[in-house]
Length: 262
Image 1 (cartoon, rainbow, N blue to C red):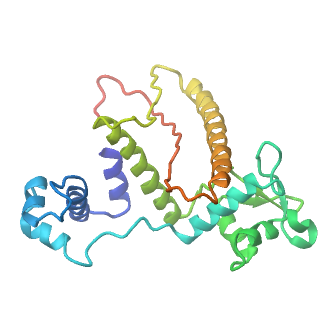
Image 2: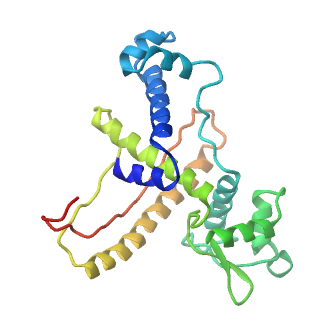
Image 3: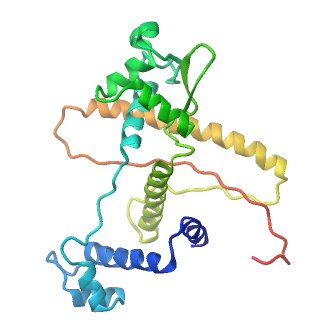
């Protein structure tokens, strides 16, 4: 919980506000996952299951008090679509799926330009507006030949608070969901593995960090290419739909001395 508390304090989320969010989560999870029948549970049953006072349960279950579905910021939704096209469409990428620098304007690059790329995804927004926002977020830059270059082969905002908050909640939620599924004996278990190592020098960890970034991006791109092919195959059939998240992360910190306080 320490990293979450650190973030909440840094963002001005008080203990009182955090408790209210936790209460709502308890009520929603109890109502969704711990029903005795298919019928709606009573407030008393939810109160007994969660340990919350019945008046809190009643307030949180009142019409209009439910949480919103995961809201994707428009900049994230559009940005993901543009990056997907950039890394999968042969007009904008090389044979390995790597995004190539694109002339900024269609009058210079034609169909293989950043302007054409944005237009292929949405005709409702100007490419200049997208580019200005991407430069602000650190997603792209313009080189000396007036070409737009993607700084990363995934939509990873560096400075946008709304965008970073969305990915924080989405990625952390899915990671914890996978671990919870496995802890509760869900079958088949989800992939949830990590490598732990201690005692290395700071220089060694720095080298491993760079290798991890490269290998992690290789894995993400490989799964991305597979998903693009499967999405095309399933475009016209009538089967049910599902979503997935595949993530890679790396974390390091100095090893504390045994006598150092935690």
